[in-house]
Amino acid sequence: MIASRLSSSVWHNARWLVIAPHPDDETLGAGALIAETARDRRLGGIVYLTDGTGSHPPDTRRLAVARRREAGHALRRLGGVGLAIYYLGWQDAHPHPTGSPAYLRDVLRLAAWARARRIDAIAVTDRDEHHCDHVAAYHLARAAISAARRPMALFSYHVWGDPPGEHVQRFRTSAVLPGRRRHALRAHRSQLSPLFGDGFRLDVTKQRMPATDTLSLRRALP
Image (cartoon, rainbow, N blue to C red; front, side, top):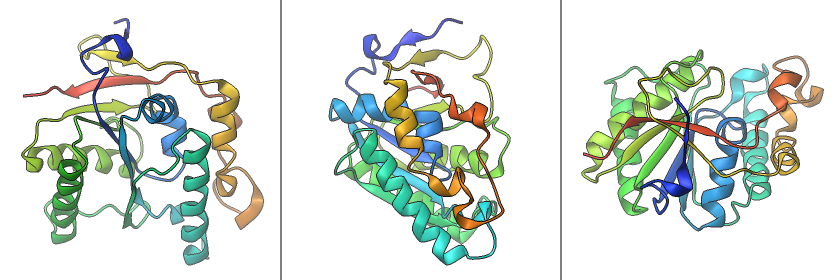
């Protein structure tokens, strides 16, 4: 299925909330969406699910501080100056079990934030991605929409997988200059360099990001 232009759809005036499982997912999967909606003053905020400390053992406290700082730099480079940023602080790669008190607490927190920011659409990593935190972020977003008592649509973006098949409606964001997106990604130095020693390194092929994001409509407005 060919993706429709988001700017020509019924969502062209929507107010968005972007949920990223880890700092750097916002640039890799939703950088073009962030740039477009921040430019048009339609970005209600960014939520980071985890502290991102699973990438490099063992200095987790210092790494958590660094990854928050890197996320702020990346967002500013995408045009998100003065954004509301929320950190849920889940332990990287250890999502809260569905239905646990911590999980339900954050469902209600996210629902309250969405109401307060007058959010119309949430973009989050897809339920079919190959990382437990990406899947957990999707289900948390869906649960928060159900709890929010506000009509909101749910879209997925794709970091570690391809968009779903023909049965899912897709939308394409406006283009962001590739250099601007790469500049934002370079803010995440902990994921691109030996700054914190041995650990995760983002593959060079993932650093070649497209100019646009593809969003898959997972839950339409009721």
